[in-house]
Length: 162
Image 1 (tube, one colour):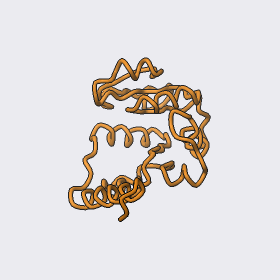
Image 2 (cartoon, rainbow, N blue to C red; image 1 turned 90 degrees about the vertical axis):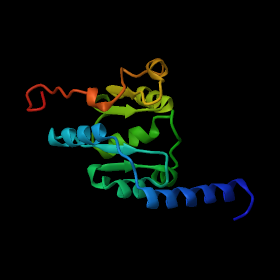
Image 3 (spheres, rainbow, N blue to C red; image 1 turned 135 degrees about the vertical axis):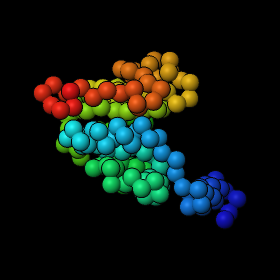
């Protein structure tokens, strides 16, 4: 309640949680479709977020069970992981998914996240241009940039996902 940065942050968070409760979460249907398709193809999927409210947001959206691994602001703080563009959060997720980074995919809509994916040696980094920053995502190191995840096609030799 104090007029401090910490107090203002706490109030902002309370407003956010109230809005989340009252209005829910809007999801990108194409993203949810891609996640279901990845899981059908046998891929394990993780979520990375700097937010300390990730679990609350995922529960509000009804999608928490889609992710085998969650590295969020709470986990990062517990493990003392630096934020993006440092790749630590992605590397921790890959480790928990038991997948070498070179065989993993990072999908990011933020420049710092793309930089983290490339810096971590991930096999594929897809930038999602949701705000007119396709060139910046490519310059940050995205292997490919899409406007919507409906553009992503799964190709896997010798599987029904090919």
